[in-house]
Length: 85
Image 1: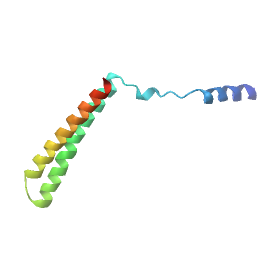
Image 2 (image 1 turned 120 degrees about the horizontal axis):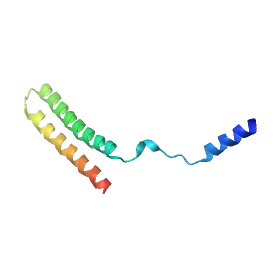
Image 3 (image 1 turned 135 degrees about the vertical axis):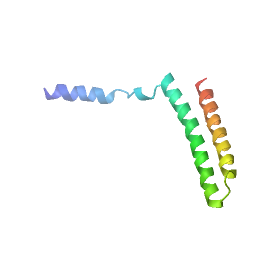
Image 4 (image 1 turned 90 degrees about the vertical axis):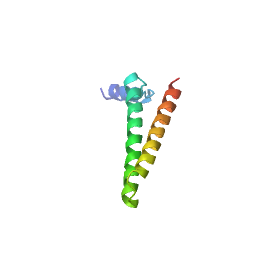
């Protein structure tokens, strides 16, 4: 009995590991693209808002970093789409 179990265990451990969680299906790609885009815009806006609070310049840094966040988000989007093709 013990040999049978240990043989099966060794066979399982020798098999190459395949990761089924990182397949590039449509849902995961869409989720990655949307999260990259939204998170870069939010981070840019928060940095701009924080700098406006520190330097008491109301919309200047917010607008600058919001635009930078949008540019970064779309750059990440295009990079991801290019990697798929």
